[in-house]
Length: 173
Image 1 (cartoon, rainbow, N blue to C red):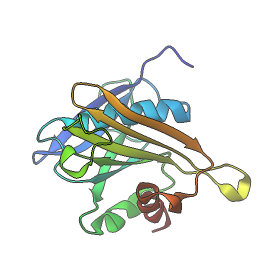
Image 2: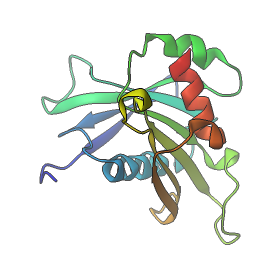
Image 3: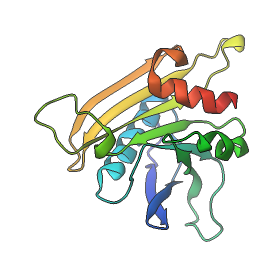
Image 4: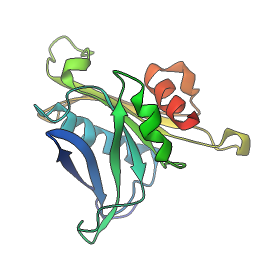
């Protein structure tokens, strides 16, 4: 792995988390994407940052005024309260990753002693017809940085988990 760190900087629009700028370099493995998910879930824990479950598409683009080491961003494409994310997500063309972030108000903590927990899922689309399997990671964390759960999996069936099923639906749209 590279010694260059992966930086994440949230940006807002209208008081809502609109995306997260990725700087330094791209995550290079399933584990690094899941670590990026953990950092994103910690951002989603912050009061007022995320009001509802939101889907983010990773794009290899960034604002012109971004820092010189910016490599791309996770851009909010919609929420799952309605299916408008399907329309908004149509501009995504073969994204390297899709993320779904659940704020504390939409997360049932896996441990009863944890109350302000956010959670999320990252789907790394594969090309099964070419032997490249779908990969995914799931994380649950508290705002103080405590990771409550963390799981990675290679060779997933996207339909076997509610989060990956929604993300796969966006890919198919």
